[in-house]
Length: 79
Image 1 (cartoon, rainbow, N blue to C red):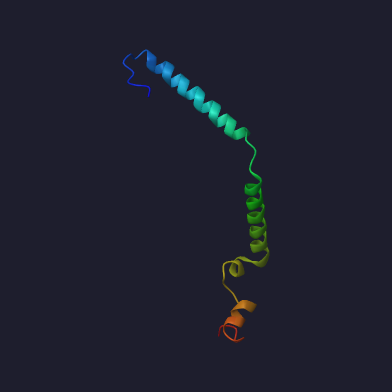
Image 2 (tube, rainbow, N blue to C red):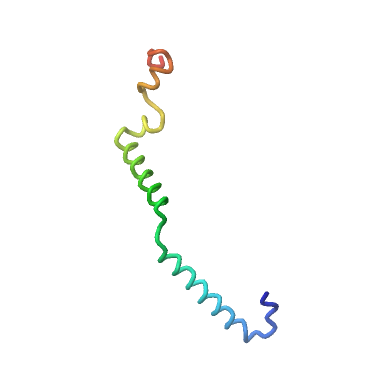
């Protein structure tokens, strides 16, 4: 471990070293390629959101009459 910093003169040096290392790690992460699986999941989410927008918020949220609602209650339309 680093131990205690007894001299206040060493603190700015240590702080600068930590800042430099954090910047370096962060920059490396920004430059990493997004995994293919993550790209696929994002594409599926975008497609699902587009489908939900096309059919309307009531149906997408489970509201409104649909063929599934009618099948569940024997074709009576939920009424």
